[in-house]
Amino acid sequence: MNDFWLSCGHHLTDRDAKGGLLVTDEYLKVYLARLELAPPPEACAVERRLHKALLADPRRPVGTDEIAAIADADARENWQQMVAFRDHLLRHKTLEAAYLDLILRKVGNTPPLFLNQLVHVILRNALDDCGDPFVIRAAELFFRPQRMTTHDEALIAADEEIIAGTGAAPLSPLVSMLGIPAGAQIDILTDDNAPSYWDRSDLFDMALDLTVGRRGLAALGEAIERWVQHLLAVDVAVEPLSEMRDVLLSWYIGLDAEGTRIGDALWHGEDIDGKTQRRAVGLFRLTFCNSEEDAVYLILAMTADKMLRVKPQNLLVGLPVRPPAALR
Image 1: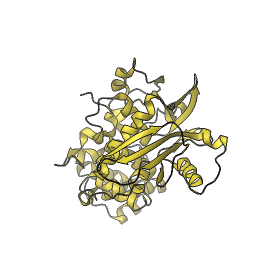
Image 2: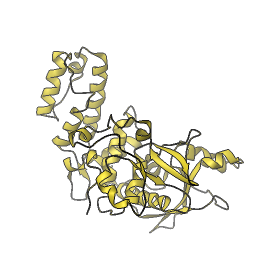
Image 3: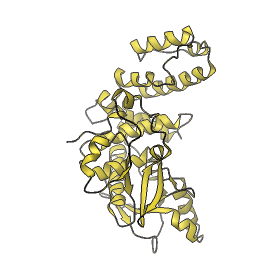
Image 4: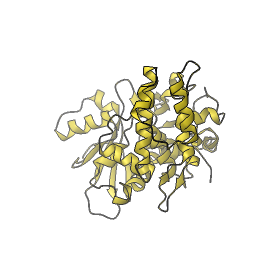
């Protein structure tokens, strides 16, 4: 089986008997390698001592007084956020449980960057046996914003960081550690170039065709199935639909803020104008494989400026099921 997404740090974790990700010292040390925490030459002695102590023992308790003694205000804030997040991870049996607790409590003050990193590594675990590059590329939508564009009458999703030219500042320090180059050229994923995805997966430089009726939306449906099964322990089938006509939205979930707004408008019987309809990227029907629960409709939409920002937590809190106690 091909490996992928090395930058998420999944090789630095262990797994429990049920396949959940266990936090290791090596995984925690990656956070200490971030630019925000690696002390610059002008850092005060307190900050340098704290960083050195945590490199030796990344589970070491850190008191508020230690952080308060750091001279630089920005550094203090960075350390407060990282230590709070680290402590949250250590309070839970697995990374999956830590993530579920965060979203069930409405995230709190957790930086979006940390949430995206959790989604990244948890999805890597959920997709471990997946050999389809289209499904794995579709899953990137869960943790990386996309810029939508049309090309030859196709609707294409490309990684926003790559489009904006900010890929030189990687989200994960492992990108630098592994020598993964930045500034790659974007190609649209096709059957012909799909085998090259495995060597390029950490570049996030392959765009995905999300045109209705084509492979991309079906691949995203499978990624959703795996996400739900892994975190809620329930089997679902997710089918992309070609249009919203005659769809009874008795239960719906917006996969992003725009999708939620469209669903709310339809629920209240409002007319959807052509401009809003054109922002809809995909409509899916989710059914429960071993239950008589009604179908749930999933709405994916881009913003007026053609950005796509999926909120994978919406699936977990919006479905009529709750995580099993073993995962909470």
